Length: 234
Ligand code: ATP
Image (cartoon, rainbow, N blue to C red):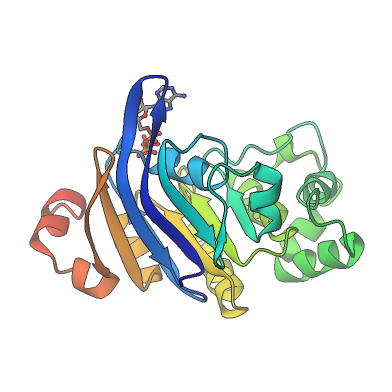
């Protein structure tokens, strides 16, 4: 079984169905992209995986463990961390305090973990006593990634990876994600810049109006006429 296995998942808000029969498998060590236009349901899927939306039908398994409608605490404890859309840092808390918040399900060796994250992203060490609300966009995204790493995840979900960030900042964040991945962490990433995310990932899924309509190797999707027309403006 895959590390993260999503089977026939459907969900929505109130009576409104958003996701229909989603099947996604992510193996250990993979970087996998989720593409789709605005409102397709990508954020809804990410939130559903971490238990913030109720699953109507279908299942989520992590490492063979069924997590369907489990509590977020149980899901996070199983090794799933999220860097949410908009980062959702605690603006009035310092960088260090934000990192500490990321350890709420995994409280072992907090100081050592923070030091490791600072070694990984030295910019955060320089900013450790600054309020998260005072950081630049790129620093905030680093802080959100660092907070997610405090859980020592097996898979990192990243929603809207580069939104609003300057290209040079994005380059350094891409390198950070590759380094995290090289340590064995799988990554499932939502990103509007399709060229960027197809370059970063090994496989990708395309979501349209709540359904997966296409999937495959990222290098193949880059040459797929539908992807080229809809997402790469060719
Ligand atoms: P974007 O790239 O714009 O963030 P997305 O692919 O992430 O888009 P979602 O944010 O998951 O899409 O939204 C999917 C659909 O669900 C949209 O039609 C949206 O209006 C609707 N939706 C999202 N959140 C809610 C909510 N809390 N209540 C009701 N409908 C919602």
